[in-house]
Amino acid sequence: MNYTQTLDLIFQSYLAAKPLITGKFDRDVRNPQIILDVAAQLDLLPPADRVLKVTGSKGKGTVARLCAEALRPFGKVGLLVSPEEITHPDRMRIDGQAISEDDFITSFEAIWQSVPALEAPQYLSPYGLFLLVALHWFKQQGVDYFVLETGRGVKFDEGGQLAAKLGVVTSVFLEHPTYLGPSLGQIAADKLSIVESCADILVADTQMPVGETAPGWYQKSQGVAQQAVQQFIGQAVDLPDAPCASFGQRQLEDCTLYYEGMIAPESADRAFLSRLIDRYDGSVCFYISLPDDKDFQGVCEILEELGCDNRHIIMTGERGFLSYDQARTKTLAYEGSYDDVAALQTGLNFEGHRARYFIGTQTFLRLVKQAYFL
Image (tube, rainbow, N blue to C red; front, side, top):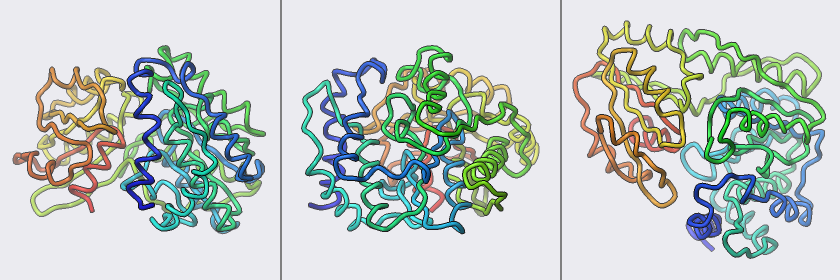
């Protein structure tokens, strides 16, 4: 079996069921116990007192990465984040090093023989299968501590249902309402259900600090991670620098490029963006890629109030297919496949702005990073 074949098998169950489950909530169509039973059968469930897991609407991946880095002085640390940053194997790491493709294939083959075949509309969630691969690899490598970022929810998410010593909730926004909602109250109930599988819980303060060199949510994530690790280990810790998947910048000869994961207005640091715009004398263009299941209107209102150019990008493709009806009512800059880096580089025509700021989902940021930041 090769790497491409493993990915095809990971996604095939979901893609077969997708036409039958589109528009339905996770609570109606998703059963995390299927994957957890396989993990138990293969003796892959980690000791609960060594597990720290993170959920939330914003910052959960950043907090998970920071926690994993801070725990490294205490033992070997396995980290699982969702989604991947660039390639699927980089969502699982030990002491900061992503799994190799060969080890990914080996661990997948070891778990796949025990995974049941399901008929649509039942399906195996891709997140759950990646979790199984990660747990197998972590066990083979003798991991001491497990830091897990849950998927979009908790109650019907495989990682969300793993027993843990500490569960962290970074924030709750109107995110994934078509899967977890439709109301904010229902989304909050799903995220906060993490308390049911954790011995201890940390719910972050709702206050958003004003960022100086990065958006305020990143500064908040640093504080949450430091508090989480201290609560988990039982002693004060230093928080080292760690890569951030949701914010970055790069200086080019003629302009500065930025990217930020933003899917809801609650995470926007308006003061930070305003200062950045002033720095470039208003010569900033925002390139936005938000499907209809995000708070498209809320994010757009903030960016339009800032008075800069706003242009939209639509992503197409089988694994990346989502509805972009709202984006089609705005000024389009590009439409193309979610994984075609060369097409974006060729098709997206920049104009003479001093700064270009990419905003959207992690799927969009993955494409942007490969096109302009690597």
